[in-house]
Image (cartoon, rainbow, N blue to C red; front, side, top):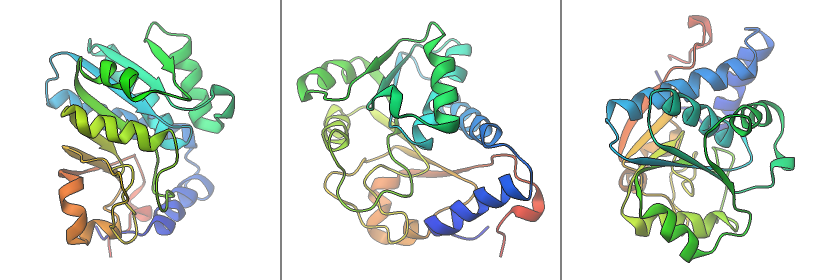
Length: 219
């Protein structure tokens, strides 16, 4: 299994949908379930706070929340976007959460103090804020959220990559999530080879999303 750039990873995703005939909602379900299983193996004793953006990373976060909740874990979802901005598979998985008993807060303009109060009661935080397409400095409110997560001292599981880390070159913006575990989909990203990235990735784990063998980038 080789390292992929952000563009190459998106191409694998596109091939899975267009030539593999696998619906995006299935890929998102497989990713979220796989990451939830990683967190369940850590045997969380207390609240898990899942921080979601408006893209597919946030959609993965909604799936993770559902599977953790089904396993009896105390879960809270924080959405840092207007729900009306959600699209596609992320929108569909948000709707499932919105019609469940899983507590969810929409925080489009969070204060540092409010976030501090939320994170102090957590044993794990899931970083599902931004994905591999993020370049440069994190925009508000994600910069505020990342700073408060890092300052909380709570263990962090990053979805695909720590928010703030460049997927292609491995440089970290200010701020960047300092993950305990990074659960990356399909294959590691090229930027993970950068020594600078190591202190942000934590333990790196690769999550399969149900791709057929012919789609896997193995050479």
